[in-house]
Figure (cartoon, rainbow, N blue to C red):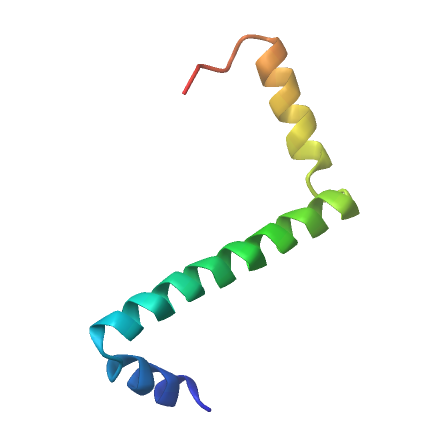
Length: 65
């Protein structure tokens, strides 16, 4: 299936099925992002960013959200 075919199929979904699809796709994307972040953490790709964040926090350059 091509992207264009998929887009056409999504456009044909009735409202309740579109809502269910959107919910599923959101969960799918969240899972993909979670796996990417976990992989980056395990590979050490975020080590420098983590050290910079710790340094900023310890020096008082962070503000509460």
